[in-house]
Length: 492
Image 1 (cartoon, rainbow, N blue to C red):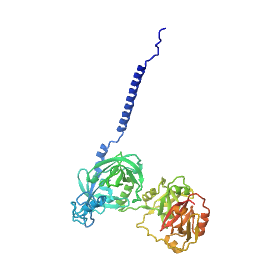
Image 2: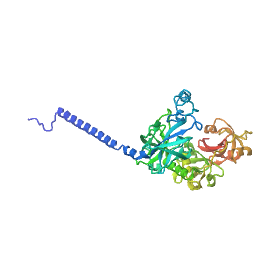
Image 3: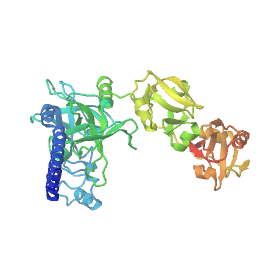
Image 4: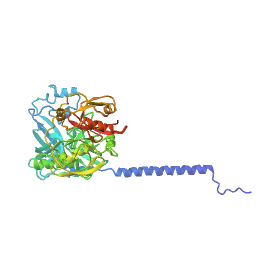
């Protein structure tokens, strides 16, 4: 019988076809990869036109300070005292000493010079920059990218936001930067800066928005924009642009351990900057909103004790007597969740919101009180000048009662102690042993005014409240320590 070869395929043929299919699949994969990379590359921003269109409104700012009014610095070089202090001590001594090739000691007869950046916001010559760029300067010179130079006057400054407003003398028909809205920024958005790092004029650097609303320890009223745009000494005061060519921030600070750029830069949001600018231009000063409260962060334990599902808001630890907050009905123990409809996630969110609110206007606050959300209308006051006086810790007196469950002893407040601490009730902690109170951070000489959101005005109140506490349940404790009220969390 003849062999039926229908459907018979040899193994070498299978292997050959398989190899061809493998090659085709590999080529398809490579084409896909290169195609996707090409699409991604084509989506990257091109800054060339943006830089050409916006460089004319960016200015280089150089200042001169006579030695009689301000000493120190790299004399004759575009660096100031702040940059000098970033160097190791032995180099600081070298540049300040008589052997320095740059002018000798801080009391040298040569004037000190520094350099920064800025940008023009009106055709008649108003310029925005940082306060630390022009602070103490006797002469300010503004140079445009077409090499024209102008003398500028310092119209006003606001150290609280590190802002300065300059006015170019005889300014007319000057190029103006387009101002955007920083509140529209999103994390991950492309931004770029133009400035004069280390004196290199009109240097362009780019990056993305790393975070929004950053609070820095030294700044209470600026919700900084954090970026990874390369910012160095000399960039200070320069503009941060979005891809629409609009200024969205003023480059102000860097985080560094070496004195140079480390990928963490901070800019003042342009919304806040323009508010300061308009007040300085129109009134010659900045009036900042004020509530009159001491606030603290809401951590996980405090959130649990106040009945919040997650940590958020600003916990009011103390309401100052006669303040707008007191007149508006705010109380210690309230947690501010919203200000004018804007959510308060961190306690640091609240001061900038209040600060930018015009004095005399009413603001609506949503607060958590007693486990329920309520709304209050508070008329914002003007932030007073100066700081409150500090109080001395109270003197001890004989202990009145001890609580072994909590591990602390308390005593009645005398009128003298209550008056010195600014409280009208509470108990004085006379001793603390190892236990829930110690673990919570309560210490001798603290004054307890509230436990588990119940007022403690006397030793009797203290005993009654403690008696009703449940085991292993977090409770809030309001204490006054050296005149400052804070909330702690205790688990009996």
